[in-house]
Length: 330
Image (cartoon, rainbow, N blue to C red; front, side, top):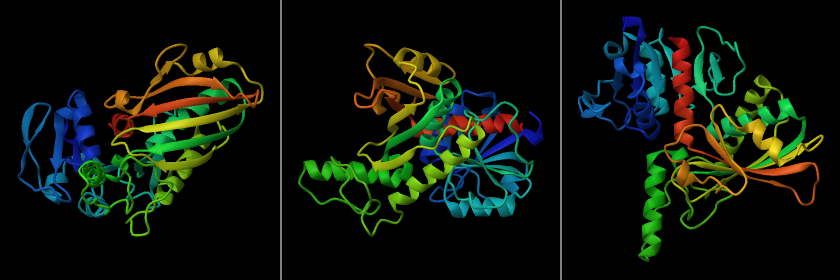
């Protein structure tokens, strides 16, 4: 592979970094992937890639000088350092650290229209997985049958906060079952066996910030892909490790019926489970690509509206879209 086609992954030991490594190990792009240490990772550490031993390289100019595309999957501090030491590389940001930069462009090839392009010097910020999933559904439905309104309850996983949040949920669960104290560094509240509409006051990042980001991402993605109306949205923190679950209410100008709705949505990364098929859940979708939809049901109190249940693996869906961006850049 040519020198200009080298890829680098900064933060290969993070949750999203591991997901990228897993996907790239079965992709031709992964044949020339450099693993770069960042955050709590140690340069020189032995790891593996595609079943073969690999070493983590230091986050410095020498390690990144040949990288044409760099995935950012670690801390905001690491993302900023990459911009300094590799100013000519194409950056694909999965950390949201660079979303406020003037060159930042929100990306989700799964929902972008044919021929969609961004400026050559863009920083490619990968959209939130829930925003991608909702955009897929609303855009396909709106293109076939006009939507007049929508509402979404989004149940978010701990993994959206990274490995420390997953560990905290695990420790809370064990602590409750053994009548011990519970760590609350990330959520500042009991999440185990619970649902949270907001975090505690001492939480480092408010849940409302994530909710607003999903709304911003939705507004941008929907404006690029069919202009379906943006739904009213509420984000609830669920006591699950991985995977978004979304209860979506959709109002049509004229309800096409459940069978037609399922037919419109099926295909191209969407698994529709209709009829008597068991609806999808977060456990079943772990490690699966795309999104799954089930339990499509008419609103008993509104003849022009239906309910849909949508599930996706948040890490896998983001990683898939990041790799699609890399393929375009190469």
